[in-house]
Amino acid sequence: MLYSKDDIQNFSEQKFAYIIVEEKENVLTITLNRPDKRNAFHMPLANELAYALAYAHYTNAIWCVVLKANGPVFCAGADLKAFAGADTAELTSTVPIPKDMVRFGDEFNGLHKPCIAQVHADVYAGGFLMIGGCTHVVASDNAKFGLPEVKRGIWPFQVMATLEPLMSSRQLLDLCLRAKTIDATEAKNIGLITDVVAIDDLENAVQKLVNEIKEQSPTAVRLGLKAFQEMKSLPADEKHKYLQSMLMQCLSSKDAAEGIAAFKEKRKADWKGE
Image (cartoon, rainbow, N blue to C red; front, side, top):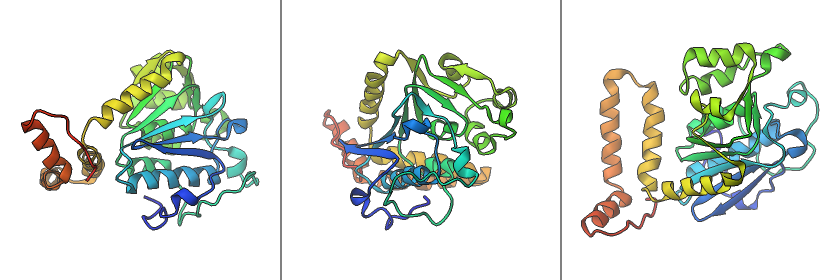
């Protein structure tokens, strides 16, 4: 993660200017809150989101993350005026400046926790880095998705890395080349999102998914997601050795002992996330 464990020690004392964070019942809910700019992200918002993801990563008591947004657009991508050098830091944030520029793809890959995007409205351009980095994306049936960068003389370079594991190369390149906008049904068909529901059912659908995830061992989930990311960079002849070591680490956890005991005693496991 871009932020260290030491960096997030004073998380509860920070003043967030562009996101809202709420920690409740082992879930960290992060809400993009720059609605007047269609939640377009600039460096201050990116820093805040990366900081919140780092907090979730290092905190065993966080078992799941939900990513939401306020306003008529979920995320319009990067704030081009800000990245062109304009001063767009309208509000004061106390989140520390990271040691390097935030790359959402790396931050979401390093989270190692289930992350559910609750998409109530349209997602464009760099917003794909957020939803593409989540383990689940539940979208309303009126949400639209598009990569319009080529219309502005830009190419969605980083988005390619995020989307490449989710869909075929031709589907990815078609999105980039034609800059077309697709509806939620097509987005599900190509693997961009995981579920489509009516807007009135969105909140309940996400909560149902959260509850299902929380029934599982948070330690097993955390180690499994870590292994899923890290094995991608290993040579084929080293993957099984690495995964065996991760299995042994998982078996030595308190959650594994509790899960086995609960199975033998025919009761529901009482997970501690350890």
